[in-house]
Length: 408
Image 1 (cartoon, one colour):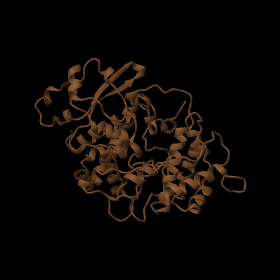
Image 2 (tube, helix red, strand yellow; image 1 turned 180 degrees about the vertical axis):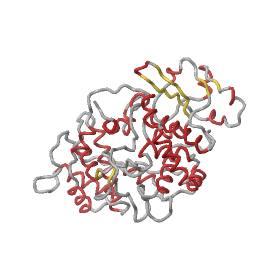
Image 3 (tube, rainbow, N blue to C red; image 1 turned 90 degrees about the horizontal axis):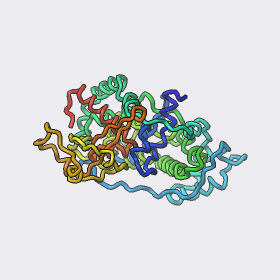
Image 4 (cartoon, helix red, strand yellow; image 1 turned 90 degrees about the vertical axis):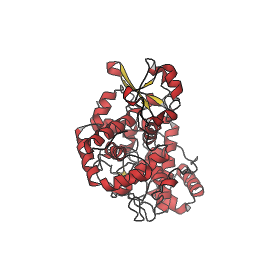
């Protein structure tokens, strides 16, 4: 039987890679924070000599962030064999990978090779990622109670109070409410209490080349690409790949950003020329806001639409990370705006695509349905789970009520 910590760790990857499944809402409902929670507390900052991505001006927030080329070289072997030859040199598998990373990411080959030679197999990371073979029954109530609970609520209120001026400024700049930013950091790491002490270089190399499930090659490929991101960040002096630590899956700092997210979405919130997602609360706050805005957050929209859904709501669940239903389609099925909001000017959400969110309690044979706006689905890009995004929204509402802020 899993302890709480083991459960948090063992189910992480189904959400990180939940997009591989057809019905997103059913793939990752019991997932933990996708940026990767772990049960360790000591971590080295992901800091930068120069910022990869600075805080954006409001008009620049809608920019498109280019994805780097994927790394095709390299394969994973589902065993605990060493990553290197007996003499410490790279195996042909890792050498082929090093050559392609050097070519594709424009990093000197000797730099890539030196980091790969320093990477060590981490048996704990492999064990925590190994499938248990047991299906965990989905329970929205259990999941919500794990995150919308007194420790996170009280700590979130303190975090918000201590950082209120910067949170207000960030909310104004990006259009992402302070409550959402605070809730995500709370769900991910309890405001920095649980950030992980796995060496990221070892974790990514282990999961990239010794992933413990040979039936899912796309997962090891994802970690090889994250390892390439880490190597590139090291070359650009944005972090020290030998020192950076985080979760067993390689996520770092208060917001638990994977190397690729740090590279593409992090922000220098305190404008000091460094991005430090562990020690700079301003960097963490700005990075969460920037991530959400670049993944479709729409300023002024609620997370859930104030509407009643028809009796056949379950048939309207399409899953995935993007809403697909128009309000006209939903009204044809019987959806209605709540009476208290019938004449409200804030119903601009009806002009956007929407999605029905299913929150199942399998042990009790019941499902709660809500109507998600683009802002709900923006949160699912942070963690590919309807449970996660709903827990963030519910914690955010609780915190907003505590702080006397309005909730859309």
